[in-house]
Image (cartoon, rainbow, N blue to C red; front, side):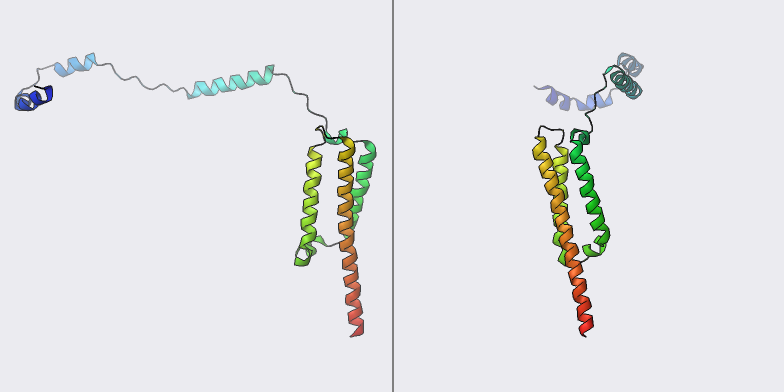
Length: 171
């Protein structure tokens, strides 16, 4: 006979029997109390702070790489200033915000954005092992393309303006 079967058969006897007095208090004493969960959060925060402070204190300072621009020759930097001045001068004559609203000039701004991405990629490679001559050649080429593009737009706008004046005169 299995224990489960025996318990089912004698179930009524168990239900009628009363527990002896004091048994619950004795059982309670024999069962260990659950300990309260410890709060480790303040200790972990303090340990993390001490670890971070000790790393900061004892870890030698990293030598920062030299400014990427300082790796380029001075002759190029002066030439670059000239290109930037030319670009600003042309951009000041053009109303770029107004041109952005005209769909026929979308290609110009897409091309300028692509040239800027290329310029930024090469600038990121300044401190890498890219040959300086190649890098400088690409950066100069980039500036020249941007200048030609803006000059072309400037000439086209001037031609359209003259054409509009001539149409008004003929009417």
